[in-house]
Length: 548
Image: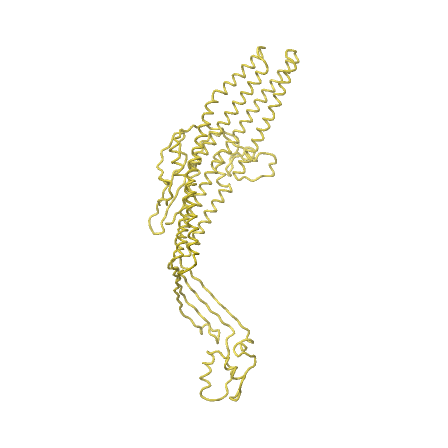
């Protein structure tokens, strides 16, 4: 049964499942390359545009697509062994006329006359080909008159043409190998899907990393501006004689300690954009100089999702292309075992065709020999000193390894789902813990400044309050980023990153049947669990062929 995979509509599902916050508006003009540019030089991307660009340009995904095409070529190559093959052969020879006589008579001399000639003439007659002697004998029989041997001429041109068709009738290896190539194609297809899901999670994580680094720069800038104003205030107070020089020094030290954090945040922001550009497959443009390769448009979303761990693990076992790829490898290896053991069975082939051979005395096309040829061949190993048995042992060991790997992959999926679920819980709790903490830290800083202005507080209280506010803001941003990146990893681990359409068609002339697997995000716009009617592709962790 031939299986055609058609990947359709998954980009739309990816966009719908990306859960991106409104990107806002800008003055940039839309470009056809998947991004927008406000200045005409630096492309800007929303999350959706970044995903679409990665699907078009990411080299890892493009290589996986070529691997699918290569596996289809393997199918065609192996299948050809069981189909008829027709071969046309031609042979054309030309011999210098000066050598024709030497080849016929064994010498370059010309004629012999008279019956009394001995030795040389006799040997020359003996060397004449039997076909020519048969032509010459009727001429010499009626009378004993001398014979002119030089009249016997062979053609200096010879040719032959044959058209032969061969057909495999039976063997024990070709047909299992053909079935194995279909599982190889399935494995390549599921590898493509696995890489695609990984790419989507990577793009989301790197996009959110750019966003959080941009927000961290704002936090650091606010802190620097506050410390600058604090330093200016203390400088004014010192000049007025109300505070000692020590207060000015404390403010300066706090400001210069904060500047490296701002510089680090700016560097992290630049590197995160370069990393995202590489994932999207964007080339370096020398004309941009030190300008960033791209800009992102969007905020850090927070859409809490209610998740049942047991259901998520079962969902991962059903949808993960990683497991489907491992199962296809098991089924392919099973066919390799059968193909290897099939070498014990007989091999029967037949061939037939026509052949046209030129005459040995002239090169006329009308004077040729032609006819039909047919051959039936069979072979069967009787004793090979254990060569086939050794190959069977190797293939069975490889089959056992594939099964063990598959079972371990099932546990790996369970681990990845549980890890992503645990990270989601951690970041959700961090977000809840920081919801009020930022407001409290802002209020504490305001009170510390008011106390200092009123002369009831000290400068150290203001600096401590500023540090606490910075810590709370950074923790909150990192928690938002951690939740979104963990959510992207959770969708990858459960195979819910995109939607695929798989169509199945039989070799026999029957109606085409198709099944659509909805593997889009498991939540709707409100974050609630969607009800899907996805057919179970993995009812149990044991490898078996998918229903078609």
